[in-house]
Amino acid sequence: MSLKTIRLELARDHDFPNGSADRGYELRAPLTAEGHIDADTWRQNRAACRVKRFWPGEDDESGHLRHTRGGQWAFHYDIDGDPDDDEVGFKFESHVFKEGEYVSIREHDGALRTFRVASVR
Image 1: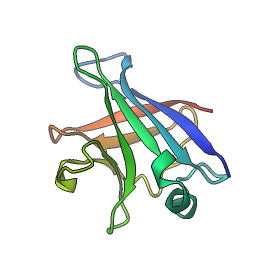
Image 2: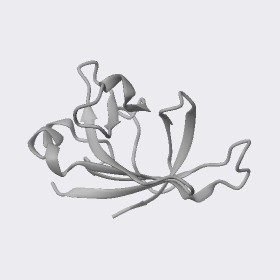
Image 3: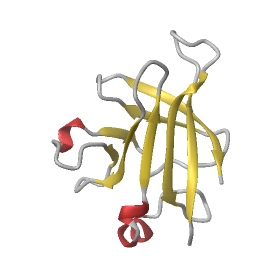
Image 4: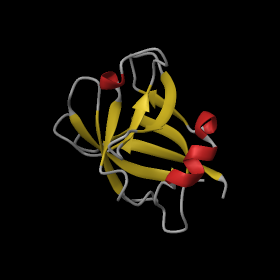
């Protein structure tokens, strides 16, 4: 199973009624045929499972996709930092990562934001 590059773009919200292709994440992760993140393949390829957060007016952040002891998926940017600072994917373990689907992420500031899966390649 190969790693996929998944682009998530900010979905419509009160600040961006049309969403925003300039705000989001790009991550590399192994997906099952159904489009779920494959935890077993992730364990074998942790170092390659990366994430980049992009947001206008802010420096891009690069980090790793992490699977927590509680079974959640999170984005970890500071290798020596506190895992409590991770951005957690809301129910990523059950979401399907296919173009047009929606996922939510609890960001650094505590806000839960919704993102549209813009592409999977």
